[in-house]
Structures are given as C-alpha cells and as structure tokens.
Image (tube, rainbow, N blue to C red; front, side, top):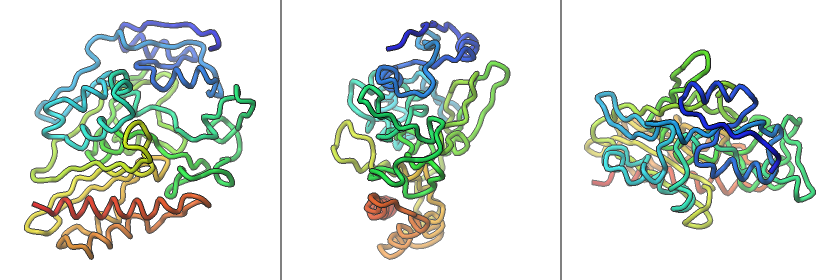
Length: 324
C-alpha cells in the first residue's frame, strides 16, 4: 500500500472532523483494504479514520418508532438478531446472504451500504498493467457500454452502468428506512431512496453514516428476500429482490417491491406494485406485475438475460406472498 496516516476516532465528532483531511472511513475494512492494496481509487486517501473504537455504535434496538441500527452493527449480528429475524425478516435474510461468514463477522451495516461497486473496469488494478479511467474515476465514459457488461445495469443507467452492490440496501429500501448522517457542520436524516446516486451516495467529504432507522411495519405484510447468483455462497447478486406484500382474502392491499443489481441504485418497481395493488393475486396478475417491473429495461449487449431473471423473482415473490 501507499503510505497513509491512521487516525483512531473515539467519537463521531472526531471521525467527521478527521474526514475533512482527505481521509477515508474504515470499520470492518472488508472493502476498503482491497481497494487500497490494489490501488483502485482515483484519489488515494491521505489517512484512514478508524471508527471501530467509537463506543455504542453497534446497537440493534427496537423502540416505539421501529428499529434503530448503529452504523457499526455487524452483518452477522443483524442476521442472528431475534428482533430483526422476527419482525424485519427481509433485512435478516439480506444480511445473511452477504459473502461468507468471515466477511459477515467483520463487515458492518454502514460499510455494506457505502461499499464501492464491483464493476470489473472500475476495480481493475493498475498493478495488472491496465487501468480504465472511467466515469466514476473522473473520466468521460463507461467502458462497460461497449465492453463486458454481463453484470451491469438494465435499468436506470445514466453514464455509468455499474450496479449497486449492497444487499442490505435493497432490503432497507423495501422497509422504507431512513439514514441518519453525522456531519462536521450539520446532521441530517434522509430516506434511503435519496441516499444512493448513480455514482455512489450523497455523503459529503465531512459526513458519515451514523444510524439506520426502520419504521414500524404494517400488520400482516409478508417479507421476502431473494438473490440469484452464480454460486450460492460468497457471490454478489446477479439480480436480487426484496418485497413486503400485504394480502387479504386473496387480494393485494399493499406492495413494496425493490430490485437489486439491475440499476445503479436499488430499483423500486412501482409499476409492478401498482399492477397488483387492489387485485386478486393469480398467476396472471403476478405475471403482469413481473412484466411491468422491467417495462423500462434497456439492456446492454450482454445482459438482456437479467430481464427474465428479474421477472421470475418478481412473480415468485408475489405468488409466495399470497400463499397461506
């Protein structure tokens, strides 16, 4: 690695103050250390700010407003938490699907939300003798558009077609969570739908994720997380889906359907939701909703197969929600 300073932050204020010195946050380190070793980042950080020493930031607590999760909560703890498993099962399933047990024991929820994309062009290390100065690195084009785009976006690509890699982000989007952000000058609370952008997230140079807030859920809603990947362990999603669907007497009262790994950000399939809301759940209505979910898809040269996978996951989620 290139030289950098290592700063141990004891408080949130110390962490965001240190971030202003061209510093990078490190918690579990499962993503950022690989980026540093492979010299992937276009601007190498002058310092790493270790936030693991900040006390009390790994909580998973339920209160009258819902669920509150500290940024340092481990993915393994989310997957095994009794309250998360019982009441927010889609999040427990998503956390449990991430990588391997070793990664889940180190990786934090805040880090999983803020991780970098897995695009092979962005991740290509200069140590290999090849370096792609893509849009995310300050360049002018996305190399995937005319290159290997098997795992890239079919929806919502604007300039950059790398897909959002976070499984927990998909689940939290279906739960309509909010992100509490700590800043050096001001704090803010934003819906998770406003947190992600095509090129990353909205965190400023002096900000970090402090807490994730999940509101209470409607009674009777069925939650599910599905993830299609080439291997059943370790792999990132080819397509994923998180759903919260309420069915009464065979008809859909409400639906939230969020698709992952098909767009730069978690994709809320609102047209699919509207296709079943207020209607009886049948194979036909589920199929119509699946078609609606990908109605705006614009696949690249090598990833049209994602459309059929997406439709299958959407249809299965709807039909499973209708089963007693």
